[in-house]
Image (cartoon, rainbow, N blue to C red):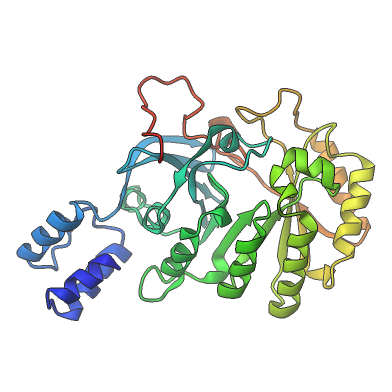
Length: 352
């Protein structure tokens, strides 16, 4: 937006901005100097005013596992984030983007929560994870879907709304809103805003326990915005939009995987006004840096039995396929080396 306003103020023809956006959309230009459709003088002017790079992120490190690639990006301020791409054998890719460097909500199962909040990402930093030329240099197409399931609580960052607009607006990235997923542990005020402003975006609400006191120990935000409040918002959204809503349930052995949990979770779903539009995604716990040492993954047999138990109670449920645990790229494992004793990667300055 700042670039568009600057071009207008300098009386540059409107098509110059469109040429710039075309280069940005194709994810081939990394710097203003690479946008050869623009006159050399204009490229130099934009680089002097906005810096040389079109994208505010630089790849710092890449890790690969079967079907998964994780890129550690650094921002111009030195903050670090991780972005994960899953390559499905059916031939399509899904990208998991971060919305914050670190996270301040302190969920006990999550390595990002153990980092604490470094800062919110800007809309440009969020979108740059999707549009960065790194992916085209690797010969990868733009991902078929984008999930805000990386580092941070997406709905605690107001810049996420601008990022969603940039990703879905036909004049910018032009991706389908229905291929966007926003995951939240229940930041209710901005959940209301999300369903009002981006009704076609898919929503995943982390539940992790149907019992309020226990959920508050796992997800401290429960004390501010209870699960019941968030479910009421999603009830109205499902009834109005007729869009499917996902409830994530991270299964931790001996913590939230009992038959009592199963029955209460099923009852929670059946109590919805449109229970057929709610789908439980059961996730096997992944060992995460900074999590309580007694958190353990249940057996695969127990995970499958939990899913079956929901199904026989009339609840739509599946086990989420997960990749990348070997490189700390699975659910709850991202920490961008803030928790690693790696002297080669400096911490960013403390935010004001």
